[in-house]
Length: 140
Image (tube, rainbow, N blue to C red; front, top):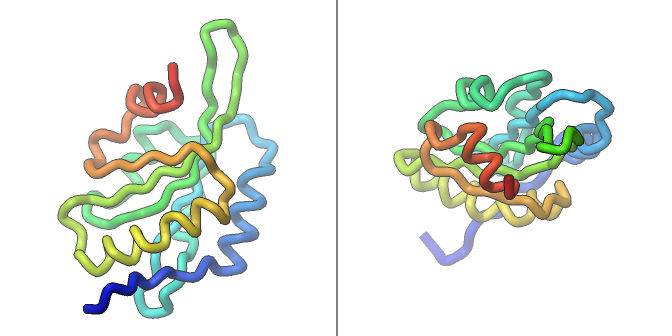
């Protein structure tokens, strides 16, 4: 294996889905789950989830497969305000295939730039993906 990391292309479908997701009007928690297509070396849409809880998001992810999650989280503040922070969550389980981990790691920054998201979090264990974890990351 050479020192080069293959960066997977972000497909036009994903670019459009990211744009649509960013400007969605719904007032709930939603997620856009993206995965790497190893053969085509592209980032593709895995799943779109609307009106979900963090627990449902956790259940929709496989514990041994890396994924990128773009999350629009409905956050209720103590003063009654509601906000919808957009987060980039990079889920990379320790026991996933090494080649996949490298492809995901090598493509993470370019996808994060394409999604234009400053809030980026990494998680290694699926059971760590909880509402408490997310609120802590968001600074509440």
